[in-house]
Length: 140
Image (cartoon, rainbow, N blue to C red; front, side):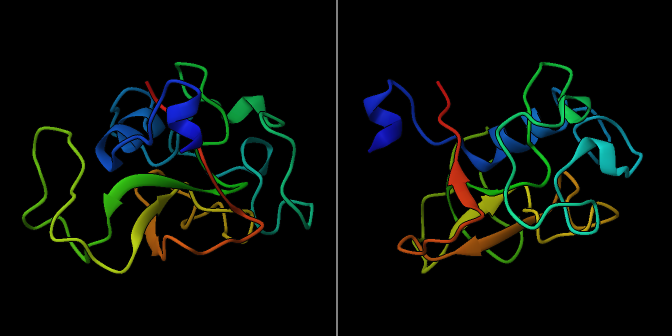
């Protein structure tokens, strides 16, 4: 509802990953392939709570998007599936069959930068779940 209120929507999982890979580049993180603490708010890199938005600009994508790895998980529009078998190939959201979980992307501060906070990392969470490290990013 908030995304619609500000004139946006939740991104699809495909849109989110494209953005997290600096416009679809074949790289592990938004900034490239090196796992370094100066680029993401993650486990073992200081801090025990989420950080202010865009607090590590060295980790921005080439388009200038910040916090695409670590800090907080982000909701996307798609329902969670264990694999991509049967997923839409046109970038649209995977809306059916509906399941019990929606996809969350980006990792959080409770993940390690050397693997779990990579651009391809994903998980699922119940639509009613509320956690300190779970948020969203409206898209247009």
